[in-house]
Image: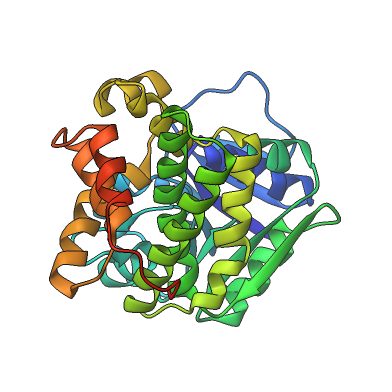
Length: 311
């Protein structure tokens, strides 16, 4: 099967894994590489890449609007689009799949999520991911092109739950990094993770996803991967902000797109409009906007009335 990939960062890892399976890959990127695995051709032309029917869209959500301005004239109903973004769009918290369907003629869309890393994709280390779509053929195509003896691709019909869970897990990773930067020990971080997951469940349900999806690779699996040490930028950003570095400077130092941090303000507005109780998200928003200090955020959270452990 021939495959197109848009994006040269994480997209290069996807292209390498697809090529390892014996498929031909066209990679659209402006980056240059000293050497490429066999089976990968690089082009700066979207038209060239979109000659293929299966397209992996590996760009962060902030880059999506400008990409869609080009895709809208090139994508049609034959294309299957699978994105890897961990973002949500706007104060309505639209998923990237929703935006792809609204802005292009593609209908067969999906999302690839979970604890994937460059080591898994580029080197063939054992790993797994989940692909979610309303269309079983999209799940099948991803399995055929990306899966292999050392990469397990699970399927899910809960596209909404996988997308929202992946995005919200990024926010929880920021919170855990922040807690680690504040010097909290394992017990405190364990409590933070549990109560943060309760907030993820509330948002996922509100947006039409299933809570049980969060126990899989796009939620729990992704969270464990970061806590175990894969140095996700969300976690590193949280640590830096807790140590007094401004969010802008910290992101510049990381040289990475931190999608979880970018949607916290939209999430706070969404929670207010829906009357959702998201105290951890609201506290993090206050810290990122410079309205409260880390210590004040902790004091606010710890002084809340204690209730039952419902989700």
